[in-house]
Amino acid sequence: MPLPGSLPHDPALAADEATRIGVAVQRKAAWRLLPILSIGYGLAYIDRINISFASLRMNADLHFSATVYGMGAGLFFIGYAACEVPSNLLLLRFGARRWLARIMFTWGLLAAAMMFVCTPMQFYSVRLLLGMAEAGFFPGVLYYLTLWFPAAMRARAVSRFYIALPLGSVVMGSLAGWLLGLNGQLGLSGWQWLFLLEGLPAALYSFVILRLLPDKPADAAWLTPQEKAWIARQLEADSAYAHLGHSAGVLRALLSPKVWMIGSFFFCVLTCNYALGFSLPAILQAATGWSVAHVGYLVAGFGLAGALSMLLGGANSDRTGDRVLHCVVPCCVMAAGYFIAGSDGPGWLVVTALAIAFIAYNALQAPALAVPTQFMTGRAAAAGIAAMNTITMFSGFVGPYWMGRVKDATGNYGLGVRGLAVPSLAAAVVMLVLTQSLARSPVLSQTLANEPA
Image 1 (tube, rainbow, N blue to C red):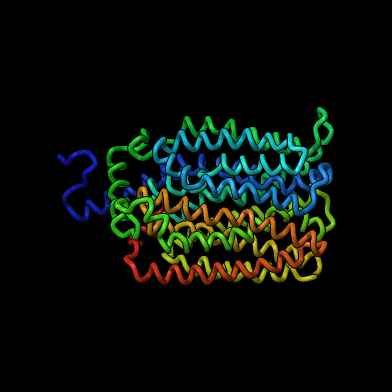
Image 2 (image 1 turned 30 degrees about the vertical axis):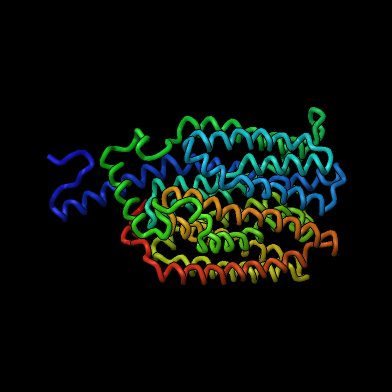
């Protein structure tokens, strides 16, 4: 009789059994983990960027210039970057369940506390603290996914979690008009209601994370011994091909040129995303002349299209085994979209070009995020992904500050949007160089790429 977790001795039967177990494991993990993580990240994204809608009223009420607003929007990412690596190392110590729940609870309270800001210094301080509180959530989740999903299936897993980013735009856009319309209720401004009612759900959701999220496959009561053994075998095989595996120390991961290259790639594309994201409602309102509510619905439409492109991009990248074209082509499309949108064209052309750029940005996310998890595993992955995200997070300061300064200097966002074509093209070049470097190293097997997750 075979031992628990072992497979039959006949090679054909063993392969069939392994396939059956693998399909069951990935389906269970996808349904039990990804929705929980996705909702958590959706709340994080909303609380991070909801000042883009709040600013439509808050800036006038508090007499904030575009530069003050851009500085406050960007300071979130300075706090985030400063605490990224320590946070991910603490996740290893305390476990994903407790640490991710702690992150959500503290950032939810601080996001709600944004309703109390009155001066630029208070605005700067709370945004900085909010970034410090949220630090580690996204890279922590990326590392967590490497414990459950083999490399060949990871782009799909990432896309099903990260779909919360464009869907967060749908929720935020749909609610913004109503929340700002609460202006005067109980003596609060509409932007204060927006911060309160979009911040507290994150703090409450931390208890869901604490209750439902297992730290690792060995702790999952809903996996059989055979299924746990299958995950262990797959991850061990992935580790054998990793450039930075379990034996690599934290310092080696932090100093790896490949980590800095993938961090530079995301710095470029996220500079575009955050520069546009914090100014998008104002840009669309200027281009269309629509009300806040109608602009919100337009942003929600962007989000739905972006969610679809993210799922398709992740699935096709895993199916073909290609990462580079799924990143480089969207970067070039983004550059074209930004250049057209920033040129002095009619409103319909501005909206169309921005929508295409937004769709392209979301399409590249899952393939790009699968790249670092292919050359890092174990403790090196936790440190390396956090280091990558630290580099990336400075984009959240650069992008909004760039747009604010350009707006104050020129009176509109045109030059700022056109300028985003430069980091888009730079990202394409960095990804080409990185993937050529990886191609010269042992690559991860793609034999499971066509299996459903």
